[in-house]
Each structure stands twice: as C-alpha cells, then as structure tokens.
Length: 83
Length: 232
Image (cartoon, rainbow over all chains, first blue to last red; front, side, top):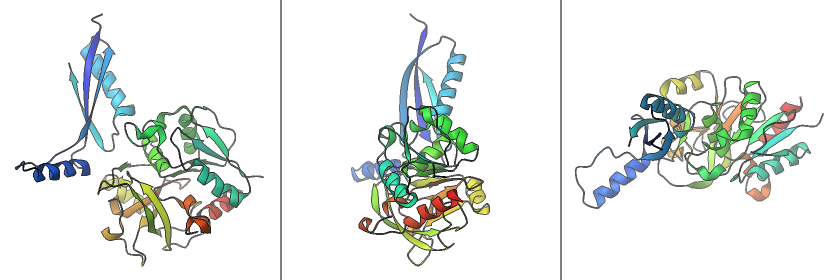
C-alpha cells in the first residue's frame, strides 16, 4: 500500500467550441435570479487510482489516457489534479 | 462475384438490421453481421458502421466503440482503401477513430431530432452518390442528439477545397442557410468523405428512406449507386 496516487481529471470543451449545455445552464441560472453570470461551461470529471508514485510518470500516463480515450483532442482539453 | 458486405454490430447498435435489409434488397446478397468483439474480417468489399447508441454513448458518442476489438481491423482496412460507410453513430465512430476529421457535438438546441430533413448532394461523383446529380435535393430522415459537426476552420476549408463534403442540410429549394440547419453543424455539413472518397460518414439515415412504407425512397439511389459501383 501507499504505492498509488489518486487522480482527478477535468475534461472541458476547448475555448473556441460552442457549449450549448453550458449556455442552457447559464440561462436557467439567470431565470432563477442569479445575476452577473457568464461563460458557463460544462465538463466531465473522472477520478481514478493509479499504481504509480512518481508524479511525473503518473502525469505522462494520464496524458496518454486522455489522448487515447478520455478526451477527444479535436474538441476537448484536460486538467489533472493529484489528490 | 457476389458483393461482400460486413455490417459491424456493437452493443446498442439499432440500425444494423435496417441497413442490412436495404443492402440485401438492392444487391440480393445478405451482408455478414460482425459482432464488435471479433478481431478479424474476411475479404470484404464494404464495411458498414450502423446507426444506434453503441455502448450507451458512454463517455462520448462513438468513443467506446472506436476502441472495440473489431475496430483495429476496420481502421486497417479503411486505411488500405476498403470502402467504409458510417451512418449516424457510425459517423461519430469514424471521427473518434480518426478515419474522418472533426467531431460531432451535442445539437446546438440540445434536443434529440427525429424528422425528415432536406439535403443537397454536394457531389454526384463518388462511390456513394453516383446515382444522384450534383446539386440534387433529397429528403432523408435524421435521428440524433449529437450531430453538430465541428472542425477547425482550416479543416473545414480543406474539406471544401478538396470537394469532400458529400451532403449539406439545405432548404427544399437548395439554399444552404441556418434555417435549414437542424443541429448547428458547421457550414451545414451533413456528411463528409476521407481524402480519396472511399470512406463516408453522414448523420442522415438513407437506409430509412428505401421503401415506400418508409414514407420516402430518396435513400434508395444511395445504395443502388453504391452496390453498382462496388460490383463494377
């Protein structure tokens, strides 16, 4: 034990890509009376545990996973958080 | 030589039999139905990735299917020049696996759209569209929640410059404008080819417009032209 790292991966649409779900959420928040809201973006959050203690190695593995499956690099980008 | 067609069946495919019926009615030959867990294909003239909701659309539409065991073989065959047709979910899978550029996003108005649309045939010169005239307007159903075609500007320009747009959403009198665009697709794109036009992905369902009981037969020339071209 102690040889694993817990990882949280945030996947979001790239800034130039229209996010109609984010737009709908923004409209709903405005209807609820929350003012001053803009640029709502919806994304995905994936958590996993990785058997790896070297954070640089772990980061490289996560990037590889994102490129191959977790994200679509045409439209999405990701941000990695170690817990 | 009988036509050899493989229809790939994923868990959640739902137009696999529709496309098989359309192809069998026109070619007289029943396609081979190939389960996603297979890893090899026999010698084949055409591979079809059918519509549906493969793997429940988990993660992204087509994302899981793109990594199914059979897809390694489909990708290799497609890259080697074997014609591959992806309809609806099949188009999403072709983009996810990298055989076609771009991606299909959630429909701009967030609704699942299930209705007939009018399409302009952008080129009658391909394996798939040779029974249509360039500029012809046809009526074919769509049924999708994620058909909003997206690619960066340089890719869109390249598709146009290389005449690789097969169909665009159009008004019934041929205007390509936002009123005719059901899902927000970039430049009203409904279907695109790969560089040598052997691979086609499209959101509309020609297999659902092949018989008068479907309410229209504008999809029939699609399969007639394809079957003839493959037999030639």
